[in-house]
Length: 236
Image 1 (cartoon, helix red, strand yellow):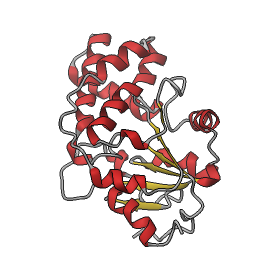
Image 2 (cartoon, rainbow, N blue to C red):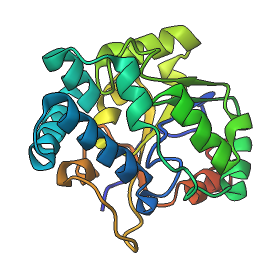
Image 3 (cartoon, rainbow, N blue to C red):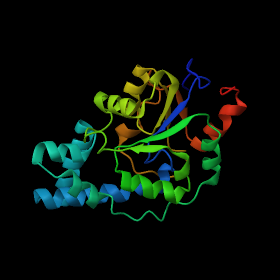
C-alpha cells in the first residue's frame, strides 16, 4: 500500500479537478461512448476498418496525450470538427451527486476544472452532476491551444491564465501520468482510481501509477476523500 504523503492540504487555496472518470465514477463508462465515436471518426477520416482505427486511436492517445492531437499532427484534422463529433454522446447515465457538491462546497478557496475535453462537454457533465455552480472556470483543450495534458506547457498556460500558485494548489486526476508535472510544480496530487467493485473499460496503462512518486494520495472514493479532509484536520 502506498505510504501517506508528506504533502497535505492545509495550505491549499485552489482545487483543480480533471473531469472525465474523476468527477464521476469510472464504472459509468461514459467515456466509452466518446471512445467509440473517436474510433468511428478515425475510421471515416482515414478510410480504414474499425479494428485498424481502434489501433491507431490508442496509439495516438498514448503517444500524443489525445487521439485528436495525433490526428491533427499526422493527418491535419480540424479540432473543431473532431470535438463536435466525439462529444456528441448521451450524458443521461450521469446523475446528480449532492454529496459531492457538499464536499466540494466545504473546500476553502477556488475550484477549477482542467480537462482535455471541451467546455461544452464539461458543461453538460457538471450540469448533470449538479455541481457546476461550485466551479469558477473550465480550462479545456481549446484554452490549452490544443496541447493536451500531460504536456508541461498546458499546465503553465492554465496556471498563468487563472493566476494559480501551484505551491498552494491540489490536483485531482484519474491518470497518474497527468499528475507528474503538477507534482513537480509543487501541487499536492490525488489519483482517483476505480473502486474495484464495478467493471471498467480502460487500457492497462491508464490504471498504472498508483505507487508513483508524483502521486501523493490515492482514493477510490473522491466524495468521501473530500468530505474527510476537514475531519482529518488537514484544512484547519
